[in-house]
Structures are given as structure tokens and as C-alpha cells.
Image (tube, rainbow, N blue to C red):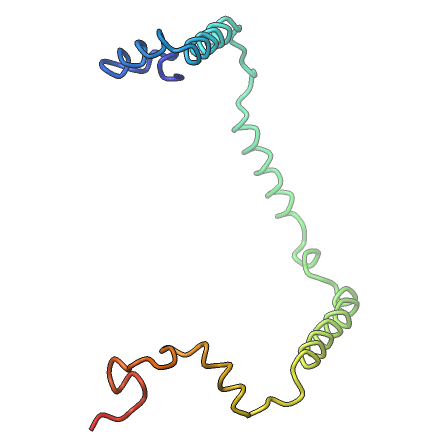
Length: 142
């Protein structure tokens, strides 16, 4: 519909769509609304900003780069006091993570057959399956 209202359709597509719109109670008012909007926008005055926005943005970015270049390299490095204040917090976070990881692990991993049965669900071959080749099941070829 937008292409029809913008006169962007040519040939058979245009004829087919215009014949549909002429007989459709839903599409006809919609096309009329699109054409009305197009006419309203065309009637608006042509307004220009009076300056190039891209050039102004480039100028401001360049000014920021120059301002940062004037600072001494020492001002951008963290001071030892800042590092000294943050180091205990980082160490505490690592220690807490290790402690929680150890606490979440079971005390002893059982080696009973129940664990093997539970892990069978992850086997490459389902229980009772025939091996496609002896090497696939870990058997030696004779």
C-alpha cells in the first residue's frame, strides 16, 4: 500500500493492486489515509537546521580527544591508595567464591553402581543397543 501511495509500483503489480483496492472496503480507506498523509507532508515547509550536525559532532569529538591529550599520563593511572582500597575487597570476593564452591560440592563422591546407572542416561548408545562397530563400544577388533 505504501508503494502504491508513493507511486513506486509499475506495470502489472500496480494494476492488480489498484483493482483490489477499488473493491476492498478495508484497503480503500487505508490507501486514502496514506495518500492524505503524503499530501500533508508534502505541504509542510522545507526547514533546514542551518548547520551541519555531523560536522559539529566531529568537532566536539576532536575537542574531547585534544583535552584528553593535554592531561598528564600520570593522572590516568590509578593511584596506589585506590588499588590498596580495592585489593581487600577483590581478595574477599575470590575467597567467598572459593568457599561457596567448596560448600556446594558433596563431601564424598559415591562409587556405587547407582552412580553408574544414573550416568548411563548420558551414554552415547542407549541400553540394549547394538554397537555399530566394535571400535565404537570400546572393544578390540579381533
